[in-house]
Length: 280
Image 1 (cartoon, rainbow, N blue to C red):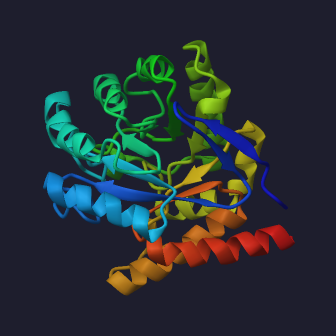
Image 2 (image 1 turned 45 degrees about the horizontal axis):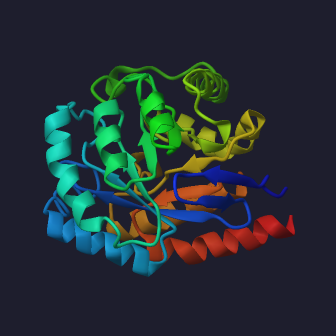
């Protein structure tokens, strides 16, 4: 079953979604992210990595300055901006692809968008800071609403959801409604079911298996399976091949965008999955 096509409106461009899967490259500028924490904390190394991701074929870059790995603690707006601002300043005007910033803080989003970012990827789907939607409106930005259950500090204590897909769809529907009440254009919104993010390993796999049900929201879908714990892999090779399998499953389930660390390796995975999807 082919994906529905959408146009994602950003400040300086419109992205066509659905003809092929777009690749969002991950750039963590944190000391403690679960996969590459500390590797790109230096602004010069982060700048070089962003250029490298674009060169490898990324369609978008998602920069995160605060970790949301399980058990991580929240940091202040000042600390987040201290990591983020030097990188955005170096990147301004240097990339041809849009920059997304992974944050739930409206103050950080406001500064990031003023420095040239075009998308805010909110890991809390407006549950931590509802004012973030108004910031997206102010800057004509795109907004990703990522489903999160609880907080990273409490995830280990949460039990399984009775009906995980119904909960994800109902919660995201409420978040989309909240964004629209802030006058955010529906054509600026993308939804993400939040693989992990407070769900048990088996329920994260269930979300991927039932991803096609998100189509009832009638919005583009972003999925981030890359190197996640639910893959159950401990080696670098296992994480890479596990991520590839999950990326293919996400695309066949209707994802319009996949968020990955290994851009170069995931491009052929997406191309093959796209060809299978088109033939269905």
